[in-house]
Length: 227
Ligand SMILES: [Zn+2]
Image (cartoon, rainbow, N blue to C red; front, side, top):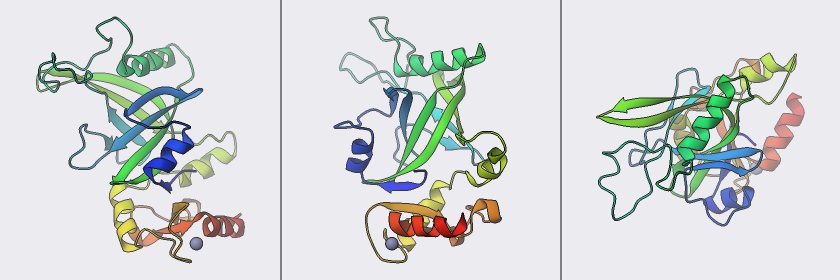
């Protein structure tokens, strides 16, 4: 569920894998892909959430580390491996090309590392575009991911409106303020970032005041009341 808080182990279990080593995992569990992101200062890639709070610009990945390679931050990010197979960059870029020809976009589950061992599920996104940016003399993939509401028709506008990205800085601030536990019962697992006042009722996720940590049980009992 969007804005769930997970340990690394829980994240792997959710995706039915032993480890998640790579940031980009095309169709890890078909029909969807999994992307890990980090906006931490020591993160290897520069991932950005745009001001619309719906769009992530996700940087493609460098060639795999090998002793024979020169500085990987000095060469283009590869579309193909040396043996001619598509890299993760190439797989996602091809998915965008299919969208440009009228195909439906790939669904991607995005997880973000907030702190060491603390991950948050950002929601299901669609890969809608990419470009090759020339940065410091090298080509870098920039993928555009748009938050998907997964809801159709009349419900779309209302649900879409409350289905925004809670900014990372807010999540970190709330995690620290609430001590990494449910603000009602103090439980420390199955946690979730909750809007105190939902978007649909005018609440904001731009301020930490409107976000708190709830466990699954209290999050559920709350949504029962609202719906
Ligand atoms: Zn609780």
